[in-house]
Image 1 (cartoon, rainbow, N blue to C red):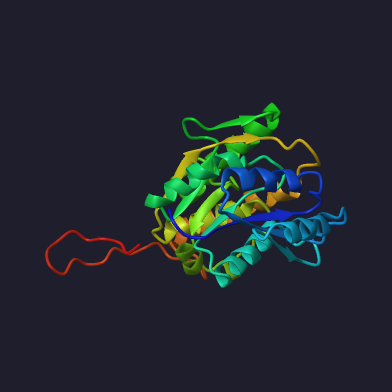
Image 2 (cartoon, one colour; image 1 turned 90 degrees about the horizontal axis):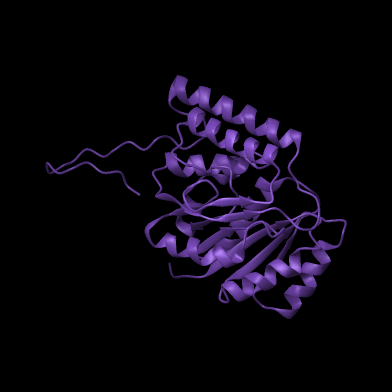
Length: 262
């Protein structure tokens, strides 16, 4: 996949991790740029990002005044990426759980896809250093998501992914209401319903070394409630108000096979 690559890295209190993850990214994909989207971190993450950006023209910083959630941070990063002419947009956590060394695999898969998900649960994928209850929660959440939304993905909740800019442009991100990790399910589902080519490549997910996980009971509850509501609406009406409808195959005009525009 050719083109300018921007890795969007949302941060909130990631001063202990940020410099290391950007250094690893620079080594793994030297041509990629990074956009740190900081939500007013009180630990000085934003100021550190500014210092790193002053030393490296491949690092950019977008400051937000308050902690508004993962979804809005990524949407702001997506808009910035497209406004500034990047062809590929990558989501990556700042805490080291997403290995920059695996990013070349995601970018290579974009040659035949519109959206590539780094998956913990396809053959070759794995999770390191997670307690059993966290792993069971993640697997159960993905299983429920697949069933409720009829979503053919093994790891719809994962946050390591790469997308073509054209797909970002085509999806209505401005009406995304999800604040937490449910955002990842939301927009993966939108992409599938829009007829995008979505593929999964195996990754190894590693628990953060420094700092505290942002996962909380409220984030889990948000995901459960939203996925349940979306699934019910999808089954009852096969459409969601204000969302992308399922693609309707075009009628063949010349006796050939029908196809869906992608």
